[in-house]
Length: 441
Image 1 (cartoon, one colour):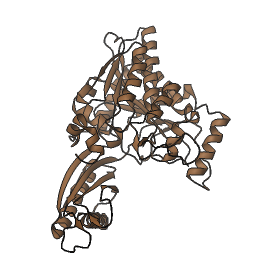
Image 2 (cartoon, rainbow, N blue to C red):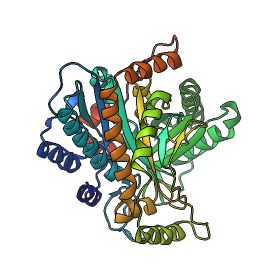
Image 3 (cartoon, rainbow, N blue to C red):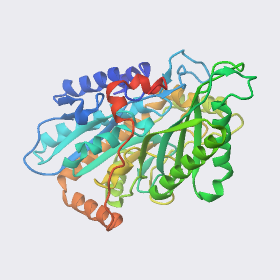
């Protein structure tokens, strides 16, 4: 696993383009007797791996992630030092894939040795960072055959989770005007229109309470003297609940169209994806917590701590070093992020383990990439891997816990019907993902 941490980190790949990462992970699984099917659910860089299904019994899926983030390359050193690569593992997915695959391998071997009924599989899930991979797999029915899902992620605490994260919606808005000398006052200015539209939406933020907004101009011209005829504005909105975030997204579109109508600029909405936040499940969280208590917290060395202290100081100067070194079960509050397995957790019980990074190392930051490539980061995902393996075996040993997890899910969902919102990027991600990343889809 630790070698795979390094191998995955050395070949960071953009969401939807994780071909080498998939080869690394499926090779690891095949070496340990797993049968692998790639391209499952019509998703080119997804896979399903299984080893020796037992007769009957529950089917536990362990999710693996492996995509990287654009613009976050960095050497595995305690200071800013770009490598020249386009992406970097600024979210630690180089750990998730190997750690979760390793958990499945260990659990499958133990299940066979114990003659347990049931099956443990790995579902390779690409493109988490753009909120697409697991939604596309769920829409294709890949998760329907599973009784429980388990996964892990790096964050700022060690422990199991049974609390929600945010619902998220993302979309790209394309403003089209005239290409001309910037001094031509009568020309339709796509860039100024897009800037004005974004400012207008932010000014109306009171109409959308609880909404968290982020945006980036992906295409906005090359030089000041040339007005671009096309400007692309990629926006992301978060909220505790799905309905308010979708209402805010439609409100954003209405504001953008109103501003564009005043300037004569055309605007096209290109929906990317949307997902509910994670649905908590106390039963699975407690199973994972018991497993973590057996494993114990990450076994960092003094050298690991020294490196993390130096990196924290470089990334967050003057901030006291803070690293969670215990184990807890987190059931209160709401997490700041969104996940593309949010919808899946409303249909299949899902349990998650976190391992801690220092608070001074921001997630989605060059420093997270640096730590993800350094051996100082290994102890956390190794802890998570052991806990996932133990939890998977516990679920096969005592299937009543899965029955209770499903009952809890039904109680939390209530009478509502859960339907995936079809992503708008599925076809382009299947046919030509590079077109998405080059902003020409």
